[in-house]
Amino acid sequence: MNKTKVICHMYTSIDGKIVTNLKGFPDCEVAGNIYDEITLNSSNAWGCGRTTFEYLSANNINLNEYEETTDLNDNFIQDERYCFAFDRKGKLFFTNPYNDYANKQSRIVSVLTTSVDKRFITYLKKHNIAYIFCGEKDLDFNLFLTKIKNYGIDTFMLCGGGEINAAFMKQDLIDEISLVICPGIQGGRKEITFVSIEDNKEFPKYFKPIEVNILEGNTVYLHYIKEVK
Image (cartoon, rainbow, N blue to C red; front, side, top):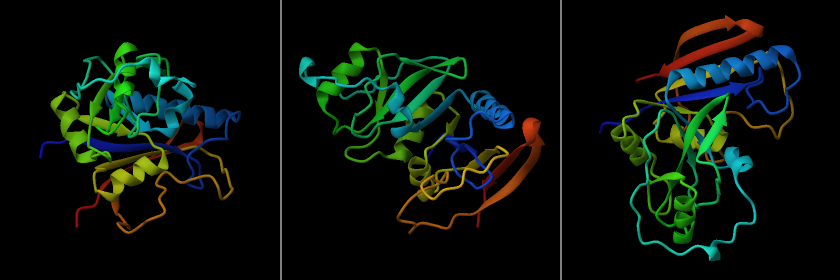
């Protein structure tokens, strides 16, 4: 099957947590900028799970104002850069078709199942939000990678959070891991690691390091490829 390559690209603390509360320290700001630069320069497509994009979603949307549609064809809009939002149940009400991340625009593409409320699809169309269907009740990540390959995307940067990373990892769909590690420790037990899942039935997984660098701002960069057994 011809599929897009997946690089799980994450920004973590020394203690392996997804960085959430280390702002304000200059070196961590530098590390964050390095992370953003790698994200946007390594591919023209990146994406995250639903929770990551909740800050971009409008609230109090009344779907009764929208008619149902019977059109379940993809609405993939060609552009220079893409931001994929994995939104299985149709909960992200984007109002802007672009995500202005790191001073660069990426066209938002909602990744949906065909079980979403058909009025939600009408909402996306009205706001010119691109979308693709990948599965019926649960997201089919193999289908996702096949579809975006057919849309001309060769490499996809999977940028978290922990649950969506784990979902790809469980199915052995991650080809490389790219970690930007800032010189800070978050501590705590509630902060999650970049692969976070309750059911670890399909683990452990193994990867081989191919690059280790110390960069500006005391940032450590680690690059792994999948270990083929």
